[in-house]
Image (cartoon, rainbow, N blue to C red; front, side, top):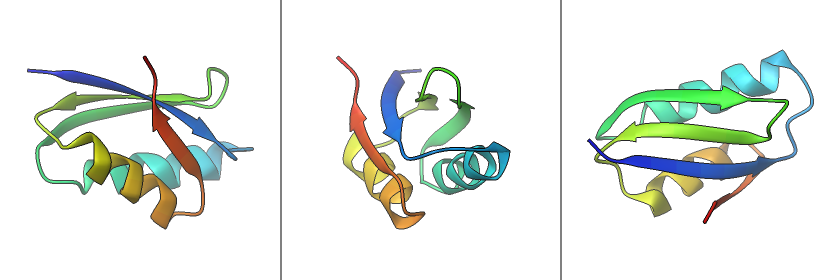
Length: 68
């Protein structure tokens, strides 16, 4: 199982975290998604395409990029 870490910007509250988590979990291949407001990141486990993960976050109104 692979792991992708995304840097997520624009989140300000628990609702934001819930929205990003739900969007990421809806992407095909995602087994789990842990979103942290404090770290401004999402750790996604599974065989999902990073670009689809980024698009899912952007569809909720936040910005994301793969953390290297």
